[in-house]
Image (cartoon, rainbow, N blue to C red):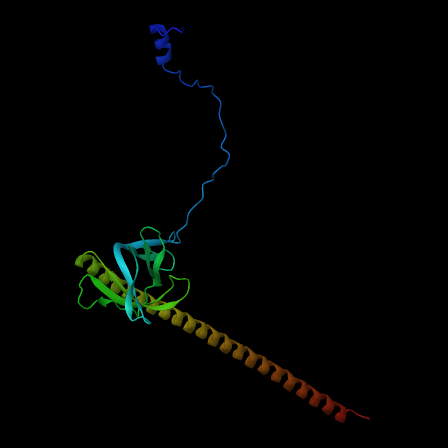
Length: 221
């Protein structure tokens, strides 16, 4: 009969030895490379960043439809100075609003709700330009006022920027016209001077011809 004494029990209860480190290194089957992720906002500075819920008005159904909950931003381009409104959904980061803020745009408080405001825009969130009526709702009255004030400030500043650009373009055009008139006048003076010189030369040739003819008449036969 097999022995079941203490020695046998100790052998059975003894912990298994830990795996020995052989120092071998296993190379990964697939090598993952670092991929740069771009958002399209690298050349822009955020001048406003607030959490909100966005709606768009469905003209066919004549009702408001939710576009998403996320962060709305005003982004100013570092080069051109143009400002656009961009909003992404929090979880998916899908764009639910994307349009330029133009001088002609106005924003106003939504009737009956001081935490919401509405505005019209030509939006590009769906990959094509669409005329949309947006409504955005914030968690507080203060955030809504901050958004509206920034919206109006940006729209006015874009208007002044366009006026300045138009004035600069007009000044450049006038300068070109002035230079062109000056060149035309100089060219006219040069042509007039050349015509005078040619006339003098012709007159000299005619005088010389008359003198030669007179000499031939008076010379003895």
